[in-house]
Length: 208
Image (tube, rainbow, N blue to C red):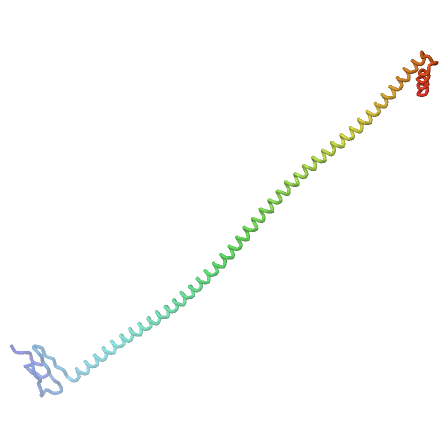
C-alpha cells in the first residue's frame, strides 16, 4: 500500500528527506507525514512563545499571588502573635491585679473580723457594766431602804424610850405620892413621942 504524498511537494514516499522542493522541507515518520514551511515555523514559534509567555505570566501571577498571600499570612500571623502577646500581658496584669485585690480583700476581711471582735467585746463590756450598774442601783435602793428602816426604827425607839421614860416618871411620881399618902395615914395614927415615928412623919412632911 502506498503512503500519501505530501501536498506541498508531491512526494509520494516517506522515511527520507526530499530535497529540491522550493522553500520547504518534508519529514515523514512511519505512516504519517509532516510538512513544515518557513511561514508555518514562524507561526508555531510565535504560538509557543505566546503560550510560554502566557504560562510564565500565569505562573508569575500565581507566584506573586502566593507571595502576597504568604506575606498577608505572615503579617496576620505577626499581628496575631502581637495580639496574643498583648492579651497574654493583659491576662498577666489582670491576674496580678486580681492577686493584689484578693490580698487587699483578705486584709479588709481580717480588719472587719477584728472590728467585729472588738465590737462584741465592747458590747459585752457594756452589758456587764449595765448589769453591774443595775446591781449597784439595786444595792443602793436596798441600802436606802435599810437606812430608812433603821432611821424609822431609831426614831420609834427614841419615841418609845421617851414615852417609857415619861410613863416611868409618872409611875414613880404616882408611887411617891402613894407612899406619902400612906405615910401621912400612918402618921395620923402614929405615936409621935417615939423617935421612929418622928423620923417617919418628919420625912413625910418634908416630902410633902
